[in-house]
Length: 577
Image 1 (cartoon, one colour):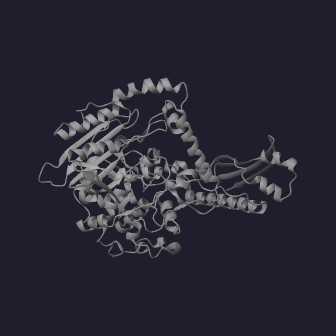
Image 2 (image 1 turned 180 degrees about the horizontal axis):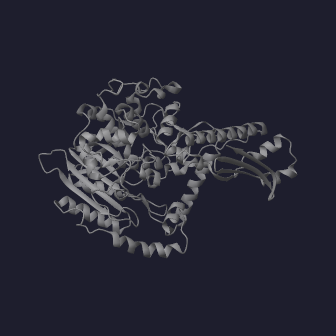
C-alpha cells in the first residue's frame, strides 16, 4: 500500500525511505529466480545477455525482462536465446517464459502484422481488402468529417491528418478504456490539415477497429485471437489472461529528489498548466493536450487497472500483452507477404516530432513505413563515416516508456520485453537499447537510428495562454462548459442503461448513493452577469447542492437539497414506483 501511494503520487515521504530502501530489496530477493531456473544455457549469446541483465539489475535499472532471439531459418536450431529474468512487479513473483509482459506502444506493431495477415482475404460482407481500400468501406462510420478519401495506406503511413482524435467533451479514464467509445471518437474526429506529418496517436485503435470488422468479431480481443490462430499464438499474445500469467508495469518508488529534478518536474507541471489555460476550447485534443488535461489516460501504469487485466475493459492502442518468444515466432514466421513487407520498407517516411521528449517516447525512431517502425543498423566493424550505403534496416516496433522492442533484422527476430518504467528521480537511461545493442553486437550489427537526434526543443513548445476575454464571452464559455457537463451526464446514463461492462453493470443500484456538488468554475461570471451584489458572491461559492438516490423496495427515491453555510435552505423529494 505504501509503495502504491508513493509511486502513483510521485512523492517521497521521510518515513517511507528506510522502508522502501531496506524492506523491498529483501522481499524482491526472496522472489528472485535463479539464473538457471527459467532457461538452461544453450549458447554463448545467453551468457552475454545474462551478464548484461545482472549488471542492469545491480544498477537498479531493471525489474523484470524476457529476451528472445530466433532465426528465420528453421533448418537450423531456431532459438538462439530465450531468457526470463527478474520479477513481475516490485514485489511480484519471478518472470517465467510464460509470463505475459505489457507491450504498451509496441502493441501497434502486433496489430499492424495482424492487419497485414488479413490483407487479400474477404470480409464478412464479401469485400476483398487491400492497402488502397478506403477505410469507410470497411468502417462506414469513419466517413464523417470529410474522411471518405482516406485509405488503409494513408492511415498506416500517418498521412491521414488524424493528429487530434481525442474528444475533449467526454474524455476521461473510463472512456479511454472503453473500446467502443474510442472507436466512436476516432470515427467522428476531423482531419487536422495543420499537422500533415505528425503521427496519429490512436492508430492502434483504428487498426483494431478495422481488424475486428474484417474478421467479423464483436471486439478487438477476439479479432486478434482469430488472426493469430493459424500461428498457434492466440494464448501468448492477448489483451487479458489468467491473473497469475500477467506481469505488472512497475515504477520504482522515489527515494529523493535533487534540485535539478525538482526544477524539471515543476517546469513540466507548469507546461501542462499552460496547456490547460490556453485557449483550447476546441472539441478535439492532441496527445500533448490529452496528457495535460487527462494524465491518467497516458500513464504507463494504465495496464495495471483491474478492468484491463480482467478483460472487462480494453485499450486497443496500448493494451496488448505477450511473451517474448511468441513475438519472435510471429515475426520469424513472416505472416505477412514478402511484397507487403518490402512495400513497408520502401515507403519509409520521417514523422514530425515537436520535442526531444516526444522523440524519446517513440523509442528515438521517427522512420516508419505502413505502420511499422524502421530501425537502422550499421555493421559493427564498419566506419560510421561510410554513409548510409552500408546500413541495414530492420522493422518492428518499440515502446519508449519501458524500453521494450520487437525487431526483425537480417533474418533474426529479436524481442526485448521489459516491465519497468523510470521514476522522475532516475537519471536518464535506455535499458532496452542497452540490451538490444548487446544482442545485435553478437551478430556484428550496431543500432544507429537513435544517434540522429532531431533539431527540436527538449520539451514541447509552450502554448500561448489565452488573452483575457470580456465578461460576455466568459459567460458564454461558462454556459458551454455547463452544456458539456450535462451532455457527459446524459452519456453516462446511456452507458448504464445499455449495460456496457466497462462502465458498470447497468443496474439502477449503480446509481444509488449521495453526490455533492464540487465545482464552482464560472460561477463568478454568472453572478456578475445577473448583477448579484458582490457581498453575496462569497456565500454563493459556499453553497452546496446534494443529490441522493435510494432504492426502497419497489420505489426509487430521489432527494435534492441546497445547503448554505451549513444550513439546508431547500429540499425536494420525489418517489417513483
